[in-house]
Length: 289
Image (spheres, rainbow, N blue to C red):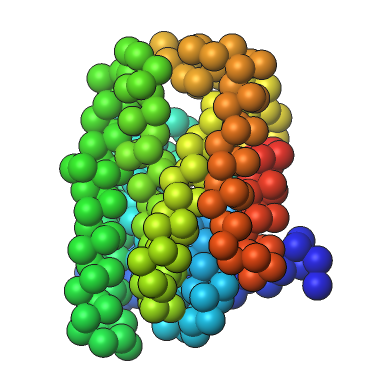
C-alpha cells in the first residue's frame, strides 16, 4: 500500500469515528448541534487524529481504543477554529472553502458552538471505554495542551503580537504545536509506550508542529487561495509577525526543512515501523493547503 492510499484510509477511518461521536441532540436548542456539526463536517486534513492513530499502530496498540481521545482532540481543534475566525479575533469570512461559522449562524451561535465542542470533547473522553487510569491520564494531557499554558496561551501571544523570533516560536509551540504533540502522546499512552519511546515520539510531534506552522506561514504568502479555501495575505494585512518576517522566504524554507528533518530523526529508534509517520512529515512539508 502506498503512503497516499494509507493516508486516505486513515482519514476515512477518522472521519467515520468523528461522525459517530459528534454531538447530537434534539429540543428547543437543536440549532447548537447544527452549528457545531457545520464546522466539524467542513472537512480538514484530520492530521491530529491521524497522528494519534499512526502512533498507536506503530506501537502495536488497538486503534479503536484511541479514537474517542483522537476525536476529542479534533473537537477541540474545531472549536478553536470557530473562535479564531470570530470578528473579535481574526475576523475571517471563509474557512475550508465555505463561510465561517459566525457568517453562517451569527456571532453568538458561533461562540456557543465553540463552547459546545470544547465541553463535549471532555464528555467524549469521560465516556470512552478505557480504564480509569488511561482516562485520567488523557484528561490531564489534553486539558493541559488546550488550556492557558497550551493552545489558549498561544492565542494570547498571537493577539498581543509576537515581537521577537523566540516569542514567535513559543507562540506556535503552544497555539499549534500542543494539540499536535498531545495527539502523539495520547496514541503512545493508549498503546503502552515506555519512557524512551514516549520521549522520542514527543520530539517528533513537537518538531512536526513547528514545521506545520512554518508551512502555513509560507502558504499565506505564496499559496493558492482556491487550494487553501481561504484568502492569502491575511498575516500581512493584520500586521502579524511570521516566520517569513523574521527569516525571509529562503530562511523560512530552510527552517521548514530543518524541523522536518529533526522530526524524522526522532523516530530512528522505531525503524521500519515508523514508515507512515516519516512519510507524513514529508507530506506536510510540501502540502498546498
